[in-house]
Amino acid sequence: MDRTQMTARILIADGTATTRITLKVRLTAACYDVCTVSNSDDLIRQAHLYRPDLIILGGGFAQTDPVAIAMSLMGEAELTSTPIIMLANAPTRLEALRAGVAAVLDPLIDEQMLLARIRGLLRDSGDMPDMQNSMAEPAAQFGAAPSITRVALVADNPARAMRWRGALQRRLASAFTICTPAEALVAAANGHAADLYLIAADIAERGDGLRLLSELRSRNGSKNAAFVVATEPHRTELSAIALDLGAGEVLPVDFDSATAIELAALALQSQLSRKEQGDRRRVETQRKLLWAMTDPLTGLYNRRYALPRLTEIAGEMKSCSQGFALLALDLDRFKSINDSYGHAAGDAVLVDLARRIERCIEDHGLAARIGGEEFLVILPSTTEAQAMQLAEDLRTAIQARPVRLPALSGGGNIAATSSIGVAMEEPCNGGFTAERIAEASLERADRALRQAKSRGRNCVVLAQPEHAG
Image 1: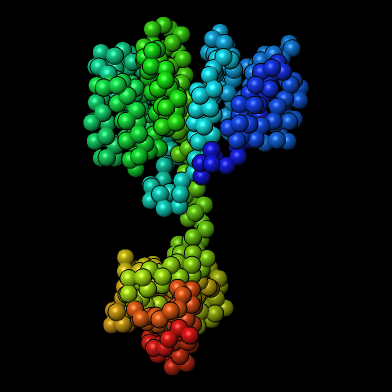
Image 2: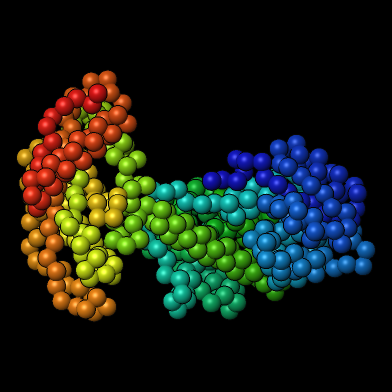
């Protein structure tokens, strides 16, 4: 969720009353929740109490170095992920950026740029992926040897791009590529997006670098990259626009001094670090989503995910006038396996049979473990003949060969069979809701499963058709 859509909390720390008041008025008018601190002694305590989303650190503190204050804040475990904007003049800028401050702005910065900076930092620190995208993206491999970061340089002419590369590659352990806008887009589409793009605001035409930024930010292959925009001194009106479009930093287009080069290198390194943090958040979110959706033993979906998904499928099938099938599957005499061989043997049987279920249904439907030895299979857009055939294939696959038991249980093999109840839900569902259709289908499949058990087990029973009443 984008934090700028909520009331973000901003802590302003400045020893000068005029500065504090002015900033508070500006930010409160922009609908932020603002708290102020007037001395460095109270700052850390107030930060822990207020839990700000962003800290603006000014000056005016008696006998206290603002950079030292920033380092103290960043050293607090609960504040390490809280971005800090420092308001400081040029001599302090390098020192603050080296210390890890997210941004250093001129104390006289105009309101438009200040608000754009705040929006950008809140967006970057609060960005989390939605479920579908996070589950679709491959997980980054953290813990392995660190890979070389890739930086794409898109300048207004090759000579400037070469100057950028020459200045930056001595300070950053990255692989630099000079490319045109078209080449950058093609590479991203082919799965070769850069980790960071340094883009001139004006390339062939005025402002076309910002259009490229927007395009890259909208593409799945490159939307999670870091972006830095370089502008000519007389094109400062583009800076706030670039930040709002997704750039993490704005730099002068020419690195015309050793200080400018170091500032640029620090800015790029900061953006690469923030990208890595974002990647880690996405991987962690993906992991948590996976844990919430799946059974930890078998890797199939769990009950918490499967039952709401059944309701969704019922609604989808109803809206397109198609039927679906529901299979309730139970392993026969599973308790005797646990009692005779131990729970490790029972777990081995469940895991092995879960794999057989997956192989049988492939991409025809969804399989879930909803209880100890109980499984559910949902088959959208399926006919009765198809559902019965797949159920019989499942029953046959489960009894086809014995399961090898782990050495912990004494080894050897054990045979297993299953009973399966099949419920068909036809396209005509009257005025029933998706929830009621799903509930009725589950009840009918469960009754059919009990009938299969009463008929001697290891068989498939089709539930009698009835309306969801």
